[in-house]
View 1 (spheres, rainbow, N blue to C red):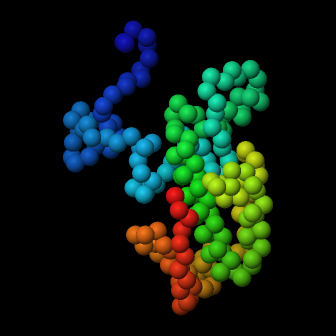
View 2 (cartoon, rainbow, N blue to C red):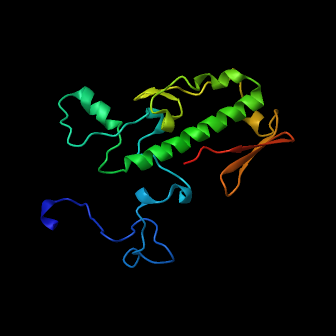
Length: 188
């Protein structure tokens, strides 16, 4: 409708951002709804719709009447079911927390300081997805780094040389300066 002074244009059935196979916006009709893409086929995730994992978000209830500023702020950090599929968001959050756990393990190997893992198993909020890093909605247990820790020590910059490779079955091979350890990634 051109009479509403709104410059928003909706292109139903068109992939507007990344046309495939050399097509232009008008002829590109083979988009896949990224909200239903199998997680195994996802290479990157932008968490705007699903909300940031470290906000420990829950699903926003539908038809909420926002009557005050506090309610408005709380709803802001919840997953909007009109925009995202909450169950899919939880899978992405679990993946993010799995990577956080792997990073902790790498830091412990590089530094020898097991206190890095102190945040583990302290939060019990939705632990199947937030892997015990959330105490409740919006209460995240942050990563604790050893004093003076340099990330370069994890990659041959003064510490043990650590490399990680993932095979097609989801197993991770970690090499710590010559010794190798195989671990199975959390199933998604």
